Amino acid sequence: AQSVTQLDSQVPVFEEAPVELRCNYSSSVSVYLFWYVQYPNQGLQLLLKYLSGSTLVKGINGFEAEFNKSQTSFHLRKPSVHISDTAEYFCAVTHGGSQGNLIFGKGTKLSVKP
Amino acid sequence: DAGVIQSPRHEVTEMGQEVTLRCKPISGHNSLFWYRQTMMRGLELLIYFNNNVPIDDSGMPEDRFSAKMPNASFSTLKIQPSEPRDSAVYFCASSLNRGGTEAFFGQGTRLTVV
Image 1 (cartoon, chains in turn red, blue):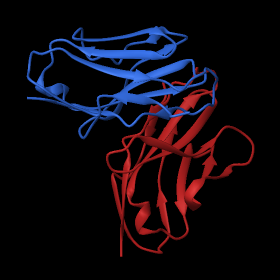
Image 2 (image 1 turned 180 degrees about the vertical axis):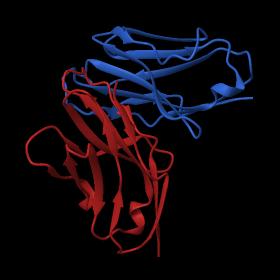
Image 3 (image 1 turned 30 degrees about the vertical axis):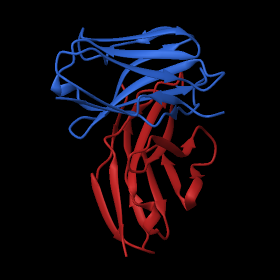
Image 4 (image 1 turned 90 degrees about the horizontal axis):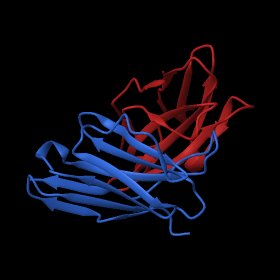
């Protein structure tokens, strides 16, 4: 069975500082990995995804994530955050044979302070 | 495309009443998902359909919950009778039936059962 662990439920950070949101997954088969963002009172939007190839994936709004198979991790990073990045971020996994069923982590609330 | 459309956006109902949530997926998508989001349990998959057929309903909490997809452009999630613990945000998402494709989410329905 697949599962996703987001190690931090809340991450406070000052504007223009770097941030890393951690995600670990467990799966016995090859996986596809996703990061979604949820702004207040909205649905989830895709930030980026890893399917295959280069382990460093770039997404929207200056975010990037690195797939590390040996550590079963897919951490999300941004070198300099903005107030508008305040939101909840979800890591998700689906396996290679899946028909699209995503398993989500419990989310990390990023709070960017001026 | 207008994206995934859910209605209503907000629903307040009394305990014991029937509640019906509606979803129109993105045209051409053939996988549809219903998720429930609460503070305590995070984002949970309730059920998903491929080509209008329910594939996995193991996440449906109990018999009070039922979901249908009579055609490719419409799905409902019904709760009968509703209980206060059903209060949550319910999301519908759709995707192409292909491994590695992301799901596109609606804005959600915030259900409050009093």
